[in-house]
Length: 265
Image (spheres, rainbow, N blue to C red):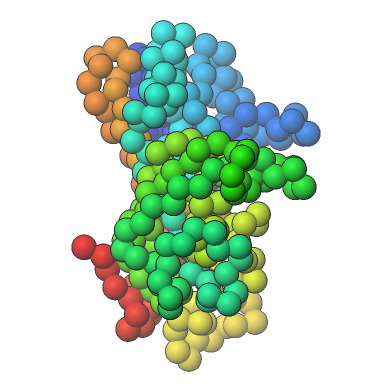
């Protein structure tokens, strides 16, 4: 795999547009599996280090530092929670009787997500399922808060802006599942029986036998980071364009989404 597109580069830092499916660091069980930092080290040397991480299936902005002082300064901002992180997600609002473990009471009696809502639930590793996280009530887990804003509604599919105020593993994925609105195509916390198919949106659609989902990857994208530059100390915003599959899915949802579609203001 070639090195992902570079979104920003200067003497102190470099940001990449990581594709979905690419690991950040070597896999603990399969060291031979390709990963972003392996590609980065081949191209730029081992002096470049990642400042933060993304899930393998999440695409978007991944920031690296080119020196130890830059790494310390940038990492310090993530630790102090002063970095503004914006993600975009396409979620499936499950019917009330089908929603799995709804423990975040943000929906109304009809199961509708409000235009803006916050999920504040402690998370920790799921002892029964290694590699996954779960909500903790009472003791255990670490404090975890995410702010959400509805951008567009298309019936049961909703396009959201997500702002994590903390940085826990799988935070957005677990918080949305806890609200009964898991991210589309989430193999851990979602409903994989639900597909976004053009045949379900467009009347008289032909070609059902060979139909593929409009988006088949985890529908989560790290869209934007805003932080202070390690040398100038001025705010810098790094933005990753919406992936092609997202663009295609939103194009057809906007065209055939029906009367329930509503763009948020």
